[in-house]
Image 1 (cartoon, rainbow over the protein chains, first blue to last red):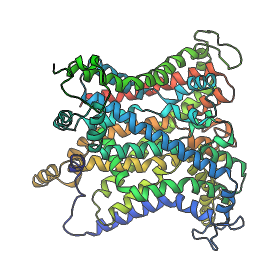
Image 2 (cartoon, each protein chain N blue to C red):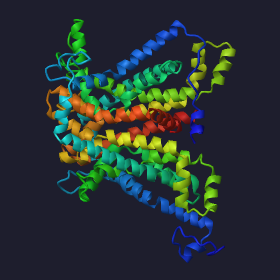
Image 3 (cartoon, rainbow over the protein chains, first blue to last red):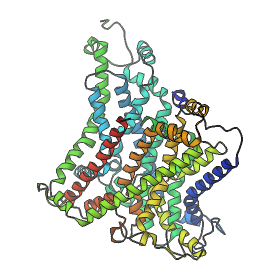
Image 4 (cartoon, rainbow over the protein chains, first blue to last red):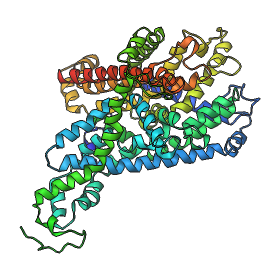
Length: 286
Length: 310
């Protein structure tokens, strides 16, 4: 299905010869881009400085050292939060990849009464902001003893209307003949979905997985509400409380922020093409 | 029907199942696939939505059982100067932040679309902040805004002999300072979406326009911008919703005094958070969430309206 998506996206406009105006534009764009990453660069730079060097605002530290990282990580809590966030984001992502695509597939490829109603009902939940649901969720969680638990953090995001909509759009591009052939081969409907249809929408699945993972990795509002014990904090919530407790130890705060940012940057550098294409796909389809 | 003609070893199927027509079987499969999701959406999305409305008509405060109080919470809200301040702050984020970020994002995308040399690298530079954790980078920006000798901006200003700025500690500069952070974090996403929108315009349109002798400005006005309208509307709504729901960066940049001095940077979601989870005035907080819901609904409906009138 990649071809369908990428054909629509043409290559950058080509110019015959280079003019001075273009060099100026290129330089401005580059400078703007460098300005954009400056806070991130300074975050890393400061995290490599000692407490006394923090006041030296040069980008390259005079004597870079990883002592802050060792200090922050040896605290123990940070690794725990790291693990919590990884576990939560991974579980929620797997759940979304499974259920969103299952529902999207069913709505795209099955004919039954009530299909359109179900689709509209799920789509309409896009209009409901999380902020409105947190109070009932909190009530529900306290009644069912979900407060301060992994499940309590994860349950609201196990399925999303956005993912369902995205996957429905992509399953609609899968030719019915493929599915019919599999049906004649004796595969049952679940196998047809899992073994035939799913591989055909792999690019959309990877986009969905990346979005869901990033969204849950950086999620702050609900985890802040539902967790009370430090051991269950996710990385953003833990980082917030950690930074608050550091007072003005900025090199420590920057180290914490850097540790929270490094995984997403690594993921980005490895999967850049996928991510950019995924955002483009979702933006055009949505 | 070829009942039992095929001995299917993959799934245990009774005789009742075999008697169904292929069509019926598929309908049953469909509802089996949807069973768990229907429970999920009903229980985790729809039921809480109605419950939020219900709680907004009660005086529930976690300690004692909820009592129906009618529109009392809404009445309190309308007469709460704090709410109107928060309302104004939220719309300031929205009305100032959205046009600025969209304009900058469009300019970057428009020119970046014409650049081939290091295109991917420059695009990555703009996109990178979007992938960072807002809660983490809020602290980086907080550091940037500190007074000398710590803060980056004030450090630069002092080198040029410009007086120190209070930024987050000021009632007038706090909100713009946070807005810059929010625009910075969201810009990359908007650039990517604009780039996708620009690329989706067939190059034949441009070629035809050039043959007709249209200049760059005319092409921009007559071809690029009109064809980019769906993308722009999507981004206006996406960005507006983002600003209406701003929380992470404000909470983390002003955690010593949530909402900034005199609540000058406090957005509506932070007020909801404090009312619900600091004061535990759940009924009042629920009424605030209903207001937020209504505003978001209006924004989304406006999008549909604008796109339909194409």
